[in-house]
Image (cartoon, rainbow, N blue to C red):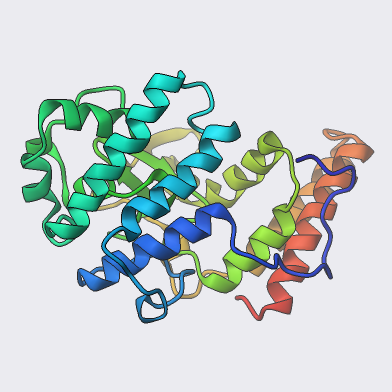
Length: 283
């Protein structure tokens, strides 16, 4: 849904959880029951009752939303039904058979056809090689895409062999997620994606190094010991990050590199996010 005006501070927070946060809540409770961490922004697992069909039901609900106009909107009716039911059965088995405790063992028990369903759900380019996966990559194959977690806090969420930078991710504090949802409510998907990219840019830039002349020297790759995730630093401030964006807009406008209309719209967003963060006491 597109709104004519950019979101600004002072609005009421959303009254009900988004579909993403609903599925994150259920699977965070499943992970907590398995001795793992889920989403920092989700309720405690003790507050989310689980039934035998909880994983499957949460997947069905989230899939229906994504089928209507999201990730799975372009699937044929037959393919969509196969993904919905096939992955739902896999999730139900993972819940019942300890898949969230021992994801490798569970994945090894899946047939080739079942692994292909998992591959399709997660949009993986290559067939799944269970033996080549790490713990995070294996576990996230058993979580709907919106509920996948960054286990090692490196700022990357890995599913199978695929990695992505996300914002918010599983380690983003609840107060920050609440502020983000308020500030982005009603934004067109492309515009929201642009702001998401700005939020994760510090992680990408922290791993690009230059020499003494300012020329590119080298980039640190994910998995290298030197890889840095600034957002994992206890002192990282999202409020400061928004101020840096505002300062950057002022500078860009002074150079004439953006129009006044672009400035006004982006300034409205970042100021609204900063206000929402401060209202919630977010760092």
